[in-house]
Length: 225
Image 1 (spheres, rainbow, N blue to C red):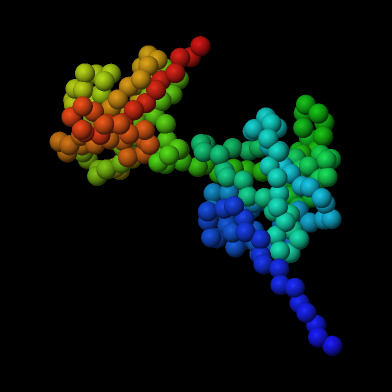
Image 2: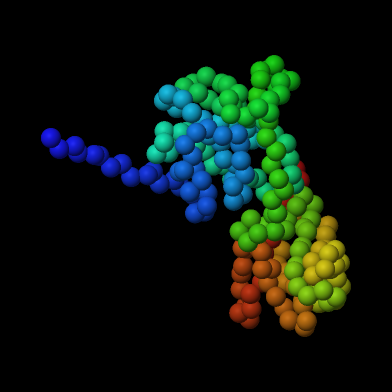
């Protein structure tokens, strides 16, 4: 008699990190929440048809769906939010019913509903990353620049008639420069003046080219209304 084994390939998860993929695909049992490559990893074990999670810092508006790995463990990898460190709470959806995470011993009482929810800590995640960084803020802009320590770095733009001297940045840490400006609502263009060169913002993905063909960075200060 011949035994025929059906080989089922490991499920491919929609993640960009190899370390994260190996972690969630290799979980053979549910574990407490864990941070892996800027993602919060949740895992649940049980004969459920559907598992999801909703978070208080998202005002409970979105339910993130888990997937099953090759061991039958429900897994979810949620990107950490950009910004300061924060504590938040979350609930699971187990076949349509709200529940605390059975693998997470950290639990608190929701003051609004009285329900038991699971608690988790998100570490700080820098916003100064290309594709994420937006210098505009309510009523102005915050500029960051990384270079050699002890340099004079200025911001020139459409808000100061492209003056290369008037707005000098402050070195807040060795090689890290910062400048905060109050600006009315509108569209602005700017560059950094560093060692006599005009440099567009390396972490601002909004890159445009002026009439002379030189690259400049753009930002939009929205109205506070």
